[in-house]
Length: 388
Ligand SMILES: C[S@@+](CC[C@H](N)C(=O)[O-])C[C@H]1O[C@@H](n2cnc3c(N)ncnc32)[C@H](O)[C@@H]1O
Image (cartoon, rainbow, N blue to C red):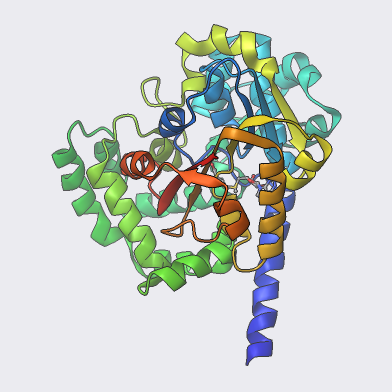
């Protein structure tokens, strides 16, 4: 029995690794930079090392004038996505940036790409977008870039199923609600119909969780910590987001449910008021395709900030030695005062190796307070560790 469950576990891992190694998984960032800003306190001396994901948050951080941002991702496709965003900013046309990444579609995407954007990309990113720029074409059934990639396909599946149930009108009302009472009213209408057998079955599949970028390690953490399991965790998270956090500027869930942003509900990097600032600073972002540890090994230095997202959850349990090695590299390249920000589906950061923990102070009262305002709402904890 143990042998069998080991095999199943290995197969799950392989599936996840093959999904996240060379596919577009995250078409937008799923961490709230409004809270990051409060915790990071960036300034013109900041040298930030962060994971790329979809690149939205690196662009957002530029507004705070950091000296340099190193974006690291082991998945080259995620880096190609950030390069495309950088190319649109370098091109200098805010409405073009809006069409691509605000609306998620634009007529003539391929022509614009070939004429105006391709030249800004690395050969590797060119190879990816040569084959995938049609993701922005308005003529496809997916109709938006935000319904592309593995997590986008899942969003589309959910949207279609919501439509079939006749709930899409209520979703629009929910997203346009002006008060928490209104939000709760529409959410209470929608929620009982949302969780039918199909949705429950879907979300209990590891293959589906891999598509949305949730590794089996994260699922295991949730199942160990919460006796009611992953479905309960998701339901609880959604209820909190939609009934306790104002929806008006929750661009994360808006784009997930509708496939596009609106001008007053979108990431900062898409707002016209920041465009000139971003254009003048976009070259401060340097992109590397590698693991975080490999990057730090090859680029030793003194970094003031590390933004690890929730990626340590990918190693907890299965790869404690990788996690330990990563912390060794982080601490070797940090100084007193370096800020390290991360999130997790675990309620505590007790997965951090003890040698690292001894060198860190945790800003618990700040993070607990901010965590409650998180517009993404799917993490159980937020942590800011400051090197002693
Ligand atoms: C951890 S995932 C999580 C997504 C995140 N919550 C968000 O904002 O969307 C973000 C990215 O980290 C990358 N990643 C995971 N582990 C990594 C590692 N050890 N080194 C470099 N990149 C890593 C993945 O390829 C993925 O694109």
